[in-house]
Image (cartoon, rainbow, N blue to C red; front, side, top):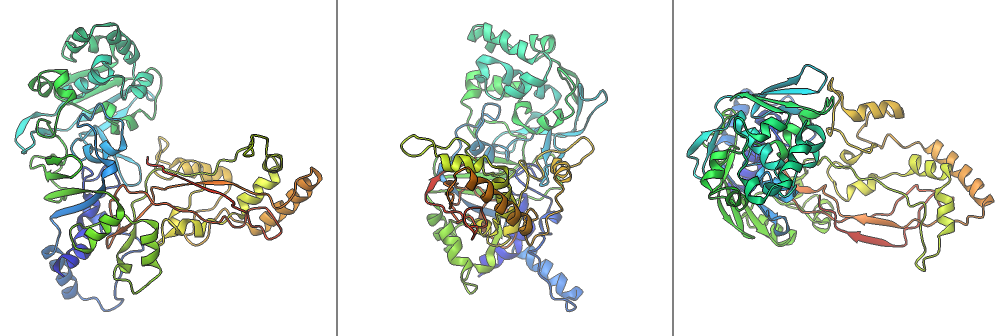
Length: 532
Protein backbone atom coordinates (compact mmCIF):
# COMPACT_ATOMS: atom_id res chain seq x y z
CA UNK A 1 0.00 0.00 0.00
CA UNK A 2 2.79 2.39 0.83
CA UNK A 3 4.32 2.03 -2.62
CA UNK A 4 0.96 2.69 -4.25
CA UNK A 5 0.55 5.83 -2.16
CA UNK A 6 4.09 6.71 -3.12
CA UNK A 7 3.12 6.58 -6.78
CA UNK A 8 0.15 8.82 -6.18
CA UNK A 9 1.95 11.48 -4.15
CA UNK A 10 5.59 11.44 -5.08
CA UNK A 11 5.47 11.06 -8.83
CA UNK A 12 3.21 14.08 -8.93
CA UNK A 13 6.02 16.03 -7.30
CA UNK A 14 9.04 14.79 -9.18
CA UNK A 15 8.28 12.63 -12.19
CA UNK A 16 8.33 15.45 -14.71
CA UNK A 17 11.95 16.10 -13.81
CA UNK A 18 13.30 12.66 -14.45
CA UNK A 19 16.13 12.13 -16.87
CA UNK A 20 15.80 15.43 -18.65
CA UNK A 21 18.46 17.74 -17.35
CA UNK A 22 16.00 19.30 -14.88
CA UNK A 23 14.22 21.66 -17.19
CA UNK A 24 15.40 20.76 -20.65
CA UNK A 25 14.71 18.29 -23.40
CA UNK A 26 12.25 15.48 -23.21
CA UNK A 27 9.41 17.49 -21.73
CA UNK A 28 10.86 18.14 -18.29
CA UNK A 29 9.73 20.97 -16.06
CA UNK A 30 10.51 22.34 -12.67
CA UNK A 31 8.90 20.66 -9.67
CA UNK A 32 6.35 23.44 -9.32
CA UNK A 33 5.40 23.20 -12.99
CA UNK A 34 5.23 19.44 -12.76
CA UNK A 35 2.61 19.56 -10.03
CA UNK A 36 0.39 21.95 -11.96
CA UNK A 37 -0.99 19.54 -14.53
CA UNK A 38 -4.06 21.14 -16.09
CA UNK A 39 -7.16 19.01 -15.97
CA UNK A 40 -5.64 16.44 -13.61
CA UNK A 41 -5.70 18.34 -10.29
CA UNK A 42 -8.60 17.67 -7.94
CA UNK A 43 -9.70 19.57 -4.87
CA UNK A 44 -12.56 19.74 -2.37
CA UNK A 45 -14.08 23.15 -2.86
CA UNK A 46 -14.53 25.17 0.28
CA UNK A 47 -13.34 22.41 2.59
CA UNK A 48 -9.57 22.58 2.36
CA UNK A 49 -7.89 23.95 5.48
CA UNK A 50 -4.28 24.90 6.05
CA UNK A 51 -3.88 21.93 8.40
CA UNK A 52 -5.08 19.55 5.70
CA UNK A 53 -2.73 21.17 3.19
CA UNK A 54 0.21 20.77 5.53
CA UNK A 55 -0.71 17.14 6.15
CA UNK A 56 -0.84 16.49 2.43
CA UNK A 57 2.57 18.06 1.93
CA UNK A 58 4.03 16.00 4.76
CA UNK A 59 2.51 12.81 3.35
CA UNK A 60 3.90 13.64 -0.07
CA UNK A 61 7.37 14.17 1.37
CA UNK A 62 7.22 11.00 3.45
CA UNK A 63 6.14 8.83 0.53
CA UNK A 64 8.20 10.49 -2.17
CA UNK A 65 9.79 8.07 -4.61
CA UNK A 66 13.54 8.54 -4.52
CA UNK A 67 14.48 5.51 -6.58
CA UNK A 68 12.33 5.32 -9.70
CA UNK A 69 11.98 2.15 -11.78
CA UNK A 70 10.69 2.26 -15.36
CA UNK A 71 9.93 -0.41 -17.91
CA UNK A 72 11.51 0.32 -21.31
CA UNK A 73 11.01 -1.84 -24.39
CA UNK A 74 14.16 -3.78 -25.21
CA UNK A 75 13.85 -2.63 -28.83
CA UNK A 76 14.92 0.81 -27.61
CA UNK A 77 18.33 -0.21 -26.31
CA UNK A 78 21.08 2.32 -26.89
CA UNK A 79 23.95 1.50 -29.25
CA UNK A 80 26.66 3.97 -28.25
CA UNK A 81 27.76 6.18 -25.37
CA UNK A 82 29.42 8.62 -27.78
CA UNK A 83 27.02 11.57 -27.74
CA UNK A 84 28.71 13.32 -30.65
CA UNK A 85 28.39 10.27 -32.88
CA UNK A 86 24.83 9.13 -32.24
CA UNK A 87 21.87 10.06 -34.42
CA UNK A 88 19.34 7.67 -32.87
CA UNK A 89 16.38 8.67 -30.70
CA UNK A 90 16.94 5.51 -28.66
CA UNK A 91 20.42 6.75 -27.75
CA UNK A 92 19.27 10.29 -27.01
CA UNK A 93 16.68 9.01 -24.52
CA UNK A 94 19.62 7.86 -22.44
CA UNK A 95 22.49 10.18 -23.30
CA UNK A 96 20.64 13.48 -22.84
CA UNK A 97 20.33 12.53 -19.19
CA UNK A 98 24.12 12.21 -18.97
CA UNK A 99 25.20 15.28 -20.95
CA UNK A 100 24.23 18.94 -21.14
CA UNK A 101 24.83 21.21 -24.12
CA UNK A 102 24.70 24.95 -24.60
CA UNK A 103 20.92 25.20 -24.40
CA UNK A 104 17.85 23.10 -23.78
CA UNK A 105 14.20 23.23 -24.86
CA UNK A 106 11.49 23.60 -22.24
CA UNK A 107 8.18 21.67 -22.43
CA UNK A 108 6.78 24.32 -24.77
CA UNK A 109 9.74 23.98 -27.12
CA UNK A 110 11.30 27.31 -26.18
CA UNK A 111 15.06 27.53 -25.72
CA UNK A 112 16.26 27.92 -22.15
CA UNK A 113 19.75 28.15 -20.63
CA UNK A 114 21.81 25.06 -19.94
CA UNK A 115 25.60 25.33 -19.81
CA UNK A 116 25.27 28.68 -21.58
CA UNK A 117 23.48 31.09 -19.25
CA UNK A 118 23.37 33.95 -21.78
CA UNK A 119 23.45 34.07 -25.56
CA UNK A 120 22.50 36.27 -28.47
CA UNK A 121 23.37 37.95 -31.76
CA UNK A 122 23.88 41.64 -32.53
CA UNK A 123 24.20 41.48 -36.31
CA UNK A 124 21.03 39.76 -37.43
CA UNK A 125 22.17 36.21 -36.88
CA UNK A 126 25.61 36.14 -38.53
CA UNK A 127 27.60 36.11 -35.29
CA UNK A 128 26.36 34.29 -32.19
CA UNK A 129 27.93 34.62 -28.75
CA UNK A 130 27.29 32.18 -25.88
CA UNK A 131 28.44 32.79 -22.33
CA UNK A 132 29.46 29.62 -20.50
CA UNK A 133 28.44 29.56 -16.86
CA UNK A 134 30.98 28.88 -14.11
CA UNK A 135 30.85 25.76 -11.98
CA UNK A 136 30.08 23.13 -14.63
CA UNK A 137 32.13 20.03 -13.93
CA UNK A 138 33.09 16.85 -15.71
CA UNK A 139 32.82 13.84 -13.44
CA UNK A 140 33.54 10.14 -13.75
CA UNK A 141 30.97 7.37 -13.37
CA UNK A 142 31.21 7.61 -9.57
CA UNK A 143 30.69 11.38 -9.50
CA UNK A 144 34.33 12.27 -8.85
CA UNK A 145 35.47 15.53 -10.42
CA UNK A 146 37.59 15.23 -13.56
CA UNK A 147 37.78 18.86 -14.63
CA UNK A 148 35.89 22.00 -15.63
CA UNK A 149 33.52 21.99 -18.58
CA UNK A 150 34.35 25.24 -20.33
CA UNK A 151 34.28 26.98 -23.70
CA UNK A 152 37.31 25.08 -24.98
CA UNK A 153 35.37 21.82 -24.68
CA UNK A 154 32.79 23.10 -27.14
CA UNK A 155 35.56 23.72 -29.66
CA UNK A 156 36.86 20.19 -29.09
CA UNK A 157 33.35 18.84 -29.61
CA UNK A 158 32.78 20.64 -32.91
CA UNK A 159 36.22 19.66 -34.18
CA UNK A 160 35.31 16.03 -33.50
CA UNK A 161 32.01 16.32 -35.35
CA UNK A 162 33.59 17.99 -38.39
CA UNK A 163 36.56 15.63 -38.53
CA UNK A 164 35.72 13.04 -41.20
CA UNK A 165 37.91 10.30 -39.77
CA UNK A 166 36.83 10.83 -36.18
CA UNK A 167 33.06 10.99 -36.53
CA UNK A 168 32.32 9.24 -39.85
CA UNK A 169 30.25 12.21 -41.12
CA UNK A 170 27.63 11.85 -38.37
CA UNK A 171 25.76 15.01 -37.26
CA UNK A 172 27.56 17.17 -39.80
CA UNK A 173 24.67 18.37 -41.98
CA UNK A 174 23.57 21.39 -39.93
CA UNK A 175 26.99 22.78 -38.95
CA UNK A 176 28.23 22.30 -42.53
CA UNK A 177 25.37 24.42 -43.83
CA UNK A 178 25.45 27.08 -41.13
CA UNK A 179 28.94 27.64 -39.73
CA UNK A 180 31.56 29.50 -41.72
CA UNK A 181 34.45 27.28 -42.81
CA UNK A 182 32.85 24.09 -41.48
CA UNK A 183 32.48 22.46 -44.87
CA UNK A 184 36.01 23.42 -45.86
CA UNK A 185 37.42 21.91 -42.67
CA UNK A 186 35.39 18.74 -43.17
CA UNK A 187 36.74 18.34 -46.71
CA UNK A 188 40.25 19.10 -45.47
CA UNK A 189 40.12 16.30 -42.89
CA UNK A 190 38.66 13.99 -45.50
CA UNK A 191 41.76 14.52 -47.64
CA UNK A 192 44.07 13.48 -44.81
CA UNK A 193 45.11 10.03 -43.74
CA UNK A 194 43.40 8.59 -40.68
CA UNK A 195 46.53 9.14 -38.58
CA UNK A 196 46.87 12.76 -39.70
CA UNK A 197 43.20 13.51 -39.00
CA UNK A 198 43.37 11.83 -35.58
CA UNK A 199 46.24 14.12 -34.60
CA UNK A 200 44.17 17.26 -35.12
CA UNK A 201 42.72 19.11 -32.12
CA UNK A 202 40.89 22.38 -31.47
CA UNK A 203 43.66 23.88 -29.37
CA UNK A 204 45.21 27.32 -29.72
CA UNK A 205 46.78 27.80 -33.15
CA UNK A 206 45.04 24.71 -34.52
CA UNK A 207 43.99 24.22 -38.12
CA UNK A 208 40.43 23.96 -36.85
CA UNK A 209 40.37 27.46 -35.32
CA UNK A 210 42.17 28.80 -38.35
CA UNK A 211 39.60 27.45 -40.82
CA UNK A 212 36.28 27.31 -38.92
CA UNK A 213 34.18 30.30 -37.92
CA UNK A 214 34.44 29.60 -34.21
CA UNK A 215 36.26 31.65 -31.62
CA UNK A 216 37.04 30.83 -27.99
CA UNK A 217 38.54 34.03 -26.57
CA UNK A 218 38.37 32.71 -23.01
CA UNK A 219 37.01 29.85 -20.93
CA UNK A 220 33.56 31.45 -20.66
CA UNK A 221 32.95 32.59 -24.23
CA UNK A 222 32.06 30.71 -27.42
CA UNK A 223 31.49 32.62 -30.66
CA UNK A 224 30.14 31.12 -33.89
CA UNK A 225 30.18 32.87 -37.26
CA UNK A 226 27.51 31.79 -39.73
CA UNK A 227 27.77 31.72 -43.52
CA UNK A 228 24.74 34.02 -43.72
CA UNK A 229 22.20 35.52 -41.30
CA UNK A 230 20.80 32.61 -39.29
CA UNK A 231 18.30 34.03 -36.78
CA UNK A 232 17.49 30.46 -35.72
CA UNK A 233 21.07 29.32 -35.16
CA UNK A 234 20.66 29.26 -31.40
CA UNK A 235 18.26 26.32 -31.78
CA UNK A 236 21.32 24.32 -32.84
CA UNK A 237 22.68 24.93 -29.34
CA UNK A 238 20.31 22.27 -28.02
CA UNK A 239 21.45 19.63 -30.52
CA UNK A 240 24.31 17.22 -30.01
CA UNK A 241 26.40 18.47 -32.95
CA UNK A 242 27.38 21.40 -30.71
CA UNK A 243 27.85 19.41 -27.51
CA UNK A 244 31.13 19.68 -25.58
CA UNK A 245 33.77 17.06 -24.95
CA UNK A 246 37.01 17.36 -23.01
CA UNK A 247 40.23 16.66 -24.90
CA UNK A 248 41.66 15.32 -21.63
CA UNK A 249 39.07 12.54 -21.66
CA UNK A 250 39.95 11.61 -25.24
CA UNK A 251 43.60 11.49 -24.24
CA UNK A 252 42.80 9.45 -21.15
CA UNK A 253 40.99 6.92 -23.35
CA UNK A 254 44.03 6.58 -25.60
CA UNK A 255 42.87 8.79 -28.45
CA UNK A 256 39.95 8.87 -30.92
CA UNK A 257 39.53 5.09 -31.13
CA UNK A 258 39.18 4.92 -27.37
CA UNK A 259 36.51 7.61 -27.40
CA UNK A 260 34.65 5.85 -30.21
CA UNK A 261 34.34 2.77 -28.00
CA UNK A 262 33.74 4.61 -24.72
CA UNK A 263 31.60 2.85 -22.11
CA UNK A 264 29.54 4.08 -19.19
CA UNK A 265 32.46 3.22 -16.89
CA UNK A 266 35.06 5.26 -18.82
CA UNK A 267 32.85 8.17 -19.85
CA UNK A 268 33.06 11.69 -18.40
CA UNK A 269 29.68 13.23 -17.53
CA UNK A 270 28.41 16.80 -17.18
CA UNK A 271 24.67 16.05 -16.97
CA UNK A 272 22.28 15.49 -14.10
CA UNK A 273 22.94 11.73 -13.91
CA UNK A 274 25.76 9.27 -14.41
CA UNK A 275 25.08 5.72 -15.57
CA UNK A 276 26.51 3.64 -12.75
CA UNK A 277 25.33 0.28 -14.07
CA UNK A 278 24.71 -0.99 -17.58
CA UNK A 279 23.74 -4.54 -18.51
CA UNK A 280 22.96 -4.58 -22.21
CA UNK A 281 19.40 -5.66 -22.96
CA UNK A 282 18.64 -6.05 -19.27
CA UNK A 283 19.02 -3.03 -17.03
CA UNK A 284 20.69 0.33 -16.63
CA UNK A 285 20.90 2.52 -13.56
CA UNK A 286 21.13 6.32 -13.60
CA UNK A 287 22.53 7.85 -10.41
CA UNK A 288 22.24 11.48 -9.40
CA UNK A 289 25.37 13.45 -10.29
CA UNK A 290 26.52 15.01 -6.98
CA UNK A 291 28.40 17.80 -8.79
CA UNK A 292 25.66 18.80 -11.23
CA UNK A 293 25.70 22.54 -11.88
CA UNK A 294 21.94 23.05 -11.44
CA UNK A 295 21.79 22.80 -7.66
CA UNK A 296 18.16 23.97 -7.53
CA UNK A 297 16.67 21.18 -9.60
CA UNK A 298 14.95 18.14 -8.07
CA UNK A 299 16.02 14.67 -9.14
CA UNK A 300 15.55 11.06 -8.18
CA UNK A 301 18.47 9.49 -6.33
CA UNK A 302 18.45 6.71 -8.92
CA UNK A 303 16.41 5.82 -11.97
CA UNK A 304 16.47 2.22 -13.16
CA UNK A 305 15.49 1.16 -16.66
CA UNK A 306 14.31 -2.43 -16.77
CA UNK A 307 14.34 -3.61 -20.37
CA UNK A 308 11.14 -5.50 -21.15
CA UNK A 309 10.08 -7.57 -24.15
CA UNK A 310 6.57 -6.14 -24.47
CA UNK A 311 3.99 -3.91 -22.84
CA UNK A 312 2.29 -7.07 -21.59
CA UNK A 313 5.39 -7.91 -19.57
CA UNK A 314 5.60 -4.30 -18.40
CA UNK A 315 1.98 -4.31 -17.32
CA UNK A 316 2.58 -7.43 -15.23
CA UNK A 317 5.59 -5.78 -13.59
CA UNK A 318 3.50 -2.70 -12.85
CA UNK A 319 0.79 -4.82 -11.25
CA UNK A 320 3.33 -6.47 -8.94
CA UNK A 321 4.84 -3.11 -8.01
CA UNK A 322 8.22 -3.79 -9.66
CA UNK A 323 8.07 -0.73 -11.91
CA UNK A 324 6.48 2.68 -11.37
CA UNK A 325 5.12 3.53 -14.83
CA UNK A 326 4.47 1.83 -18.13
CA UNK A 327 3.09 2.59 -21.57
CA UNK A 328 -0.05 0.71 -22.61
CA UNK A 329 -1.07 -1.20 -25.69
CA UNK A 330 -4.39 -0.32 -27.27
CA UNK A 331 -6.06 -3.45 -25.90
CA UNK A 332 -4.85 -2.70 -22.36
CA UNK A 333 -6.02 0.88 -22.68
CA UNK A 334 -9.41 -0.21 -23.98
CA UNK A 335 -9.87 -2.66 -21.10
CA UNK A 336 -9.14 -0.01 -18.48
CA UNK A 337 -11.08 2.88 -20.01
CA UNK A 338 -14.19 0.78 -20.58
CA UNK A 339 -14.53 0.03 -16.87
CA UNK A 340 -14.67 2.99 -14.44
CA UNK A 341 -14.29 0.52 -11.60
CA UNK A 342 -11.04 -0.88 -12.95
CA UNK A 343 -8.33 -0.67 -10.30
CA UNK A 344 -6.13 1.42 -12.62
CA UNK A 345 -8.85 3.60 -14.12
CA UNK A 346 -7.83 6.67 -12.11
CA UNK A 347 -4.16 6.10 -12.85
CA UNK A 348 -4.43 6.87 -16.54
CA UNK A 349 -2.84 10.08 -17.80
CA UNK A 350 -1.79 11.27 -21.25
CA UNK A 351 1.86 10.95 -22.09
CA UNK A 352 3.88 14.12 -22.47
CA UNK A 353 3.22 15.26 -26.07
CA UNK A 354 6.02 14.61 -28.51
CA UNK A 355 7.02 17.25 -31.04
CA UNK A 356 5.73 15.29 -34.00
CA UNK A 357 2.73 15.78 -36.26
CA UNK A 358 0.85 13.23 -38.31
CA UNK A 359 -0.92 14.03 -41.56
CA UNK A 360 -3.02 12.44 -44.26
CA UNK A 361 -1.21 12.61 -47.60
CA UNK A 362 -3.40 11.88 -50.60
CA UNK A 363 -2.15 9.77 -53.49
CA UNK A 364 -3.08 11.53 -56.75
CA UNK A 365 -1.80 8.67 -58.91
CA UNK A 366 -3.14 5.57 -57.16
CA UNK A 367 -2.79 2.17 -58.82
CA UNK A 368 -5.04 -0.84 -58.60
CA UNK A 369 -3.58 -4.13 -57.48
CA UNK A 370 -3.05 -5.13 -61.13
CA UNK A 371 -1.01 -1.98 -61.76
CA UNK A 372 -3.66 -0.10 -63.73
CA UNK A 373 -4.64 3.43 -62.66
CA UNK A 374 -7.48 3.71 -60.15
CA UNK A 375 -9.32 6.20 -62.33
CA UNK A 376 -12.30 6.54 -60.03
CA UNK A 377 -10.15 7.58 -57.06
CA UNK A 378 -7.66 9.65 -59.05
CA UNK A 379 -10.43 11.69 -60.62
CA UNK A 380 -12.18 12.21 -57.30
CA UNK A 381 -9.13 13.29 -55.29
CA UNK A 382 -8.14 15.78 -58.01
CA UNK A 383 -11.42 17.60 -57.40
CA UNK A 384 -11.02 20.54 -55.01
CA UNK A 385 -14.56 20.35 -53.66
CA UNK A 386 -14.03 16.65 -52.87
CA UNK A 387 -10.98 17.47 -50.78
CA UNK A 388 -12.67 20.41 -49.05
CA UNK A 389 -15.63 18.23 -48.11
CA UNK A 390 -13.19 15.97 -46.26
CA UNK A 391 -11.38 18.91 -44.72
CA UNK A 392 -14.53 20.44 -43.25
CA UNK A 393 -16.30 17.18 -42.49
CA UNK A 394 -13.70 14.68 -41.25
CA UNK A 395 -14.21 14.37 -37.49
CA UNK A 396 -11.20 12.64 -35.92
CA UNK A 397 -12.38 12.73 -32.31
CA UNK A 398 -13.04 8.98 -32.07
CA UNK A 399 -9.81 8.43 -33.95
CA UNK A 400 -7.88 10.30 -31.25
CA UNK A 401 -9.58 8.37 -28.46
CA UNK A 402 -7.72 5.28 -29.60
CA UNK A 403 -4.48 6.92 -28.51
CA UNK A 404 -5.57 9.32 -25.78
CA UNK A 405 -8.71 8.19 -23.99
CA UNK A 406 -8.22 10.69 -21.17
CA UNK A 407 -7.97 13.85 -23.27
CA UNK A 408 -8.50 13.03 -26.97
CA UNK A 409 -8.73 16.70 -27.95
CA UNK A 410 -5.12 17.13 -26.90
CA UNK A 411 -4.29 15.35 -30.16
CA UNK A 412 -5.89 18.07 -32.28
CA UNK A 413 -3.43 19.69 -34.63
CA UNK A 414 -4.52 21.61 -37.71
CA UNK A 415 -1.06 22.44 -39.02
CA UNK A 416 1.79 20.68 -40.76
CA UNK A 417 4.03 21.36 -37.79
CA UNK A 418 2.90 21.50 -34.16
CA UNK A 419 2.97 23.80 -31.20
CA UNK A 420 6.33 24.23 -29.56
CA UNK A 421 8.43 23.19 -32.55
CA UNK A 422 9.70 26.59 -33.63
CA UNK A 423 9.29 30.25 -32.79
CA UNK A 424 9.94 33.53 -34.51
CA UNK A 425 12.62 35.85 -33.16
CA UNK A 426 10.01 37.73 -31.11
CA UNK A 427 8.84 34.52 -29.42
CA UNK A 428 5.69 33.91 -31.48
CA UNK A 429 4.91 30.24 -32.04
CA UNK A 430 5.03 29.56 -35.78
CA UNK A 431 1.69 27.74 -35.76
CA UNK A 432 0.00 30.93 -34.55
CA UNK A 433 1.10 32.65 -37.76
CA UNK A 434 -0.31 29.76 -39.79
CA UNK A 435 -3.52 29.80 -37.75
CA UNK A 436 -3.99 33.48 -38.55
CA UNK A 437 -3.47 32.90 -42.27
CA UNK A 438 -5.96 30.03 -42.25
CA UNK A 439 -8.52 31.97 -40.25
CA UNK A 440 -8.86 29.25 -37.63
CA UNK A 441 -9.87 30.02 -34.03
CA UNK A 442 -8.05 28.68 -30.97
CA UNK A 443 -8.76 25.05 -30.08
CA UNK A 444 -11.64 24.80 -27.61
CA UNK A 445 -10.95 21.33 -26.21
CA UNK A 446 -14.44 20.11 -27.13
CA UNK A 447 -14.78 19.80 -30.91
CA UNK A 448 -12.23 20.13 -33.75
CA UNK A 449 -12.26 23.79 -34.78
CA UNK A 450 -11.70 22.82 -38.40
CA UNK A 451 -15.17 21.25 -38.68
CA UNK A 452 -17.98 23.09 -40.44
CA UNK A 453 -21.00 20.91 -41.21
CA UNK A 454 -22.60 23.44 -43.55
CA UNK A 455 -19.47 23.84 -45.64
CA UNK A 456 -18.87 20.08 -45.66
CA UNK A 457 -22.37 19.45 -47.02
CA UNK A 458 -22.03 22.27 -49.54
CA UNK A 459 -18.72 20.98 -50.92
CA UNK A 460 -19.96 17.39 -50.85
CA UNK A 461 -22.95 18.30 -53.01
CA UNK A 462 -20.75 20.30 -55.38
CA UNK A 463 -18.20 17.51 -55.65
CA UNK A 464 -20.78 14.82 -56.34
CA UNK A 465 -22.30 16.91 -59.12
CA UNK A 466 -18.93 17.67 -60.72
CA UNK A 467 -17.59 14.15 -60.35
CA UNK A 468 -20.76 12.49 -61.61
CA UNK A 469 -20.37 14.51 -64.79
CA UNK A 470 -16.84 13.12 -65.10
CA UNK A 471 -18.00 9.54 -64.74
CA UNK A 472 -17.00 8.93 -61.12
CA UNK A 473 -19.11 6.27 -59.38
CA UNK A 474 -20.03 6.31 -55.70
CA UNK A 475 -19.12 5.39 -53.05
CA UNK A 476 -15.52 6.45 -53.55
CA UNK A 477 -13.30 4.07 -51.65
CA UNK A 478 -10.35 5.33 -49.62
CA UNK A 479 -7.53 2.97 -48.71
CA UNK A 480 -5.71 4.26 -45.65
CA UNK A 481 -2.45 3.02 -44.14
CA UNK A 482 -2.59 2.99 -40.36
CA UNK A 483 0.65 3.75 -38.56
CA UNK A 484 1.56 3.08 -34.98
CA UNK A 485 1.77 6.31 -33.05
CA UNK A 486 4.05 7.71 -30.43
CA UNK A 487 1.12 9.16 -28.48
CA UNK A 488 0.46 6.88 -25.52
CA UNK A 489 -1.14 6.52 -22.14
CA UNK A 490 0.74 5.89 -18.93
CA UNK A 491 -0.19 4.27 -15.66
CA UNK A 492 0.77 7.11 -13.36
CA UNK A 493 -1.31 9.56 -11.36
CA UNK A 494 -0.21 12.68 -13.21
CA UNK A 495 1.54 13.84 -16.36
CA UNK A 496 4.70 11.83 -16.77
CA UNK A 497 7.73 11.38 -18.97
CA UNK A 498 6.68 8.62 -21.36
CA UNK A 499 8.23 5.31 -22.22
CA UNK A 500 9.06 4.41 -25.77
CA UNK A 501 6.43 1.82 -26.63
CA UNK A 502 4.15 2.54 -29.57
CA UNK A 503 0.41 2.03 -29.67
CA UNK A 504 -1.37 0.59 -32.69
CA UNK A 505 -4.65 2.12 -33.74
CA UNK A 506 -7.19 1.90 -36.50
CA UNK A 507 -10.56 3.54 -36.98
CA UNK A 508 -13.32 4.17 -39.48
CA UNK A 509 -13.07 7.67 -40.86
CA UNK A 510 -16.47 9.34 -40.58
CA UNK A 511 -17.81 12.39 -42.35
CA UNK A 512 -15.53 11.79 -45.32
CA UNK A 513 -17.13 12.36 -48.71
CA UNK A 514 -18.36 9.18 -50.37
CA UNK A 515 -22.09 8.56 -50.33
CA UNK A 516 -25.03 10.67 -49.16
CA UNK A 517 -24.34 9.28 -45.69
CA UNK A 518 -20.82 10.79 -45.86
CA UNK A 519 -19.08 7.58 -44.81
CA UNK A 520 -15.77 6.56 -46.31
CA UNK A 521 -15.36 2.88 -47.04
CA UNK A 522 -12.11 1.59 -45.58
CA UNK A 523 -11.68 -1.76 -47.23
CA UNK A 524 -8.08 -2.39 -46.31
CA UNK A 525 -5.95 -1.59 -43.28
CA UNK A 526 -2.20 -1.89 -43.55
CA UNK A 527 -0.30 -1.77 -40.28
CA UNK A 528 3.22 -0.43 -40.10
CA UNK A 529 5.49 0.49 -37.24
CA UNK A 530 6.55 4.12 -36.96
CA UNK A 531 9.23 4.62 -34.25
CA UNK A 532 10.72 8.10 -34.40
